[in-house]
Amino acid sequence: MFDSLLVANRGEIARRVIRTARRLGVRTIAVHSEADADLPFVTEADEAVCVGPANPAQSYRNVEAILAAARSTGAQAIHPGYGFLSENADFARTVSEAGLIWVGPGADAISAMGDKINARNLMAAAGVPVAPGTTDPAADLDAAVTAAAGIGYPVMVKAAAGGGGMGMGVAADEAALRTEFDKVRAFAERMFGDGSVLIERYFPRVRHVEVQILGLADGRVVALGERECSVQRRNQKLVEESPSPAVSAELRERFLAAAVRAGEAVNYRNAGTVECLLDPSTQEFFFLEMNTRLQVEHPVTEHVYGVDLVEEQLRVAAGLPPTFDPDALTPRGHAIELRVNAEDPKRFLPGPGAIRTWVEPTGEGVRVDAGYVEGNTVTPFYDSLLAKLIVTGATREEAVRRGRAAVAEFEIAGPKNNLPFFAELLENPEFLSGDYDTGIVGRMR
Image 1 (cartoon, rainbow, N blue to C red):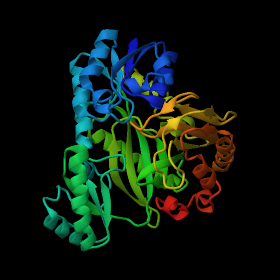
Image 2 (cartoon, rainbow, N blue to C red; image 1 turned 90 degrees about the vertical axis):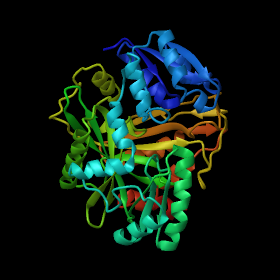
Image 3 (cartoon, helix red, strand yellow; image 1 turned 180 degrees about the horizontal axis):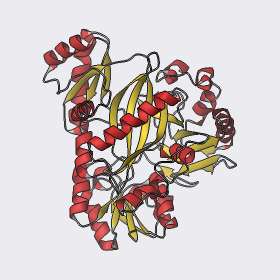
């Protein structure tokens, strides 16, 4: 194992990586913006370096400043967390060329999966189910209209370089497609610097199910079960659980086998997630995208499979074998993660502010991965995630009961937060039945 690690991220994921690294005896270095100087991850690291002002482009996405921090502190490895530079193939390549260890998949795998059209085609060639859609970017609006006619309405209009639920629109007919195509293309050019657009079949009732994979140092790819991610607002996840209440033993076997094939197709190493759409009426699933990094929701897999995924990431990067037997992975119990955000619980609009009160819930089966403590200020410069509340139980019902108690016990005063939404969700009959889909939040509102 290397002896020093720079965490090129902030907030709860920086604290999460630092916690495991320190347990393993690895010296940790935090980089932070001027706006984040007082956050817990900065003081919990063995060393901290300010890399710029609040603007992420000048700090957390500032490659030169991060590499300079690594050189000045003698860091041997860099963990990118999620977001920011975590899926930037050029950054991964630059880190490796600088003689540092990159804690993540290789730049080629990141690049291959970063373009949705290229990823779709690779997965289809590998035998992974993909939804009906274009195999090349729609060159213009007329091409998109022709493609949609062949696929059949409704269709999803997607930014080829997008991710995180951004750069997508639904068109029920040609008139809507003409509006959505221009809108998505303009958004993609502005946000991703790439206006390429993909047209896919849209499924009105669908579940979002993903599989955690880990590419081991010896070249083998293993799957650590699935996660249900269908509670979403604006195509972005709010709740994840494992195992999925929609997945039977037979379907799980198909999911995991497809995810392993996906990883093998790009010689995947380290942690990654294969995201799919599941049609509950037919039990068919289709490849959506591959996230070439650690996911926000990784703790539910950790609890169900009894592994520390950050430790496994570090071991793969160091060329070490896993701590678990890849042939004896068995899920136990149930885990649910609630993303506690600084946002209005009705319209989900951001609500930053100073934290006057912060009291975390405790007790058996309760875990909180937080980015803040009382006295901190939630600024408008970054993602609204305050903390992840993870509850576990021997059964889904027990996890839900613990979730209700933990939500009631969690006290946050100052910034707006979505805890009231979770209190409502955990009493919602549709959610409690397990038979829900990506439209559940809209039906609650």
